Length: 350
Ligand SMILES: [Zn+2]
Image (cartoon, rainbow, N blue to C red; front, side, top):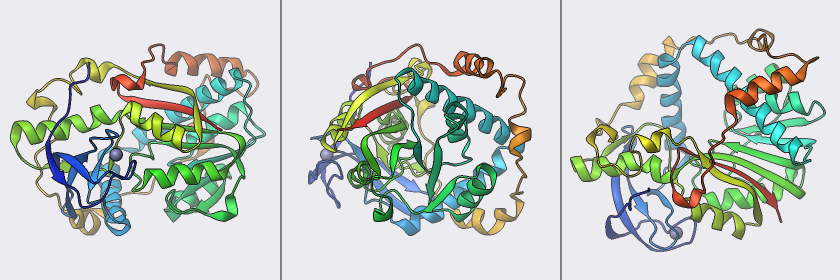
């Protein structure tokens, strides 16, 4: 189903972070806010697509904050609460899938936990599990500590923290690996954080579909496109699996799901409606300096958020049944086909 994405062969500024290849095909030019202009380069050897040159930490931090403000103003409190509940159910369904496989994690590390509700759902299934979360943002850590009582670690996945070697039997990274600057290093670090027989769970966009909108802007409008959220990696289904194998993991579950976007043409249809907007070099400073003041800090209360008719600690089967009904994906596709919206992975340390 997936159509080929091709571009002209160019010299890269930085070698491929997956296979160290020096050449690449330029498939689009993107503006990360008004912060940096980069190219999206596809690797002819491993099919990984990444930003060249990559964003540095300072650029990422600035753009992420601008995005956070823009997004907070766009989505209200009601939507935030809905997202918390949705993530709780997803964490719960994930927990059930582990239970089904006779896997019972006791020590869990979640990278970039956001609201922390995914791990809260997991903990509903495994009350004895101790959750630690790693993030660079102090506010996120403070929220997770006060709201969920998790252990907190300040850091980014790219930088190895030796104090946590072999401490965990499950590492979770949902919507994280598309943002990291060096995926090879990140996977090596995760492997080291895991104890023997540990598991790694991730979720990431299907890179082929995710990059399609930028590719279309390049070929149909012949213009740079807008990159407001820092997706700096676009994973090929087979390439990602090969890299995981090489980094000491073996697949337990590996599939893509949610084919709605594929049906609508993402990844194969050359339609202007699917293009990413042509870049206007949106001003990050505008959000940081003019709009930040409008972001209200909503008080989220866990007890209120989880006060849903189907969430019952004394009749967990009701919670399980409802969450499975909402989130279990029946249709599962081999990521090697690069169809579907997201890649789901559960890998075991070898
Ligand atoms: Zn490569």
